[in-house]
Length: 338
Ligand code: OGA
Ligand code: FE
Image (cartoon, rainbow, N blue to C red; front, side, top):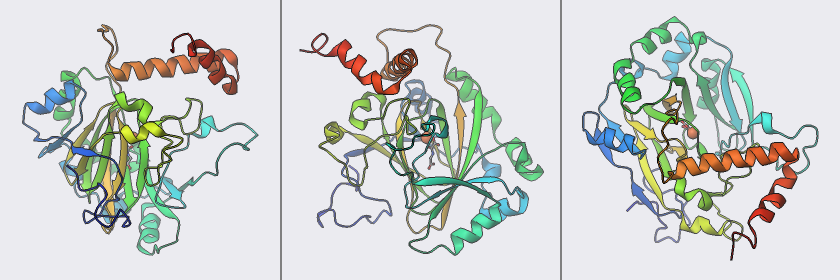
């Protein structure tokens, strides 16, 4: 059992001794295996999360701290997200309502761009009450020749082997994440397979399977917070989100050199440990297997994909997101319900 359950102080302390926030969610540990243990591929093929240790997938990136990155990545256009507090909830700007912003809650984060050096200086001089920063940069040709060299020296054979064994589609991107201590990426799911690698510091990832869709209450697909739980883990509103009390998570602490496999459609909440200065991680996002031969019964992640498609179709057909719920209710209530 995890040590993040309420403690004897009645849950008054925000953190426990592990340096991570306390939430009232039962957690079990994600299994952890060495990279050469055959169980790694068993878990991945069942699309279950697994923590992989001892691989040298990105050995050449283990030196990527902010000094090194500042020196070799001179770009002044690195993407930095700025937040009023420790939560970095993603906003899909394409889904922001045009013109009328009235019924949207105030947005907590904004985008900025700066050099790695500026980012380093800002987090060094940061004090309680200041806005928080989180660098999230996709690796592309602008990263400079030294990082390109390091990138070419990744163990691509290992990565390609995983891709082949599990029938994944192409690698779409690598996101470099440099986080201030204590930052949180709130609970969400992605539509890609993720190999999430630790380079510096510790991150805790809390995962939930796609089966728990209805415990985590994502907003409509048309919402700017699509794919993100509406439940505030620090202060869950159980009147509005009663089934959150049934959520059962899995926890993995991702340290230097560890790889966490986050299966597509698995919910994840990621937090950088308190009092480390900053964390560095790099993910590998892969398209999923093309669904040529569908097997029945469908898996729950496939059902989530169906829900998303139905929602998109109905919203598209009605040309008004406000009418979707009414139509869907008419479809179900008293007909498919008791
Ligand atoms: C991801 C992700 C957030 C973080 O890699 O999919 O959500 O804070 N990362 O590391
Ligand atoms: Fe994610």
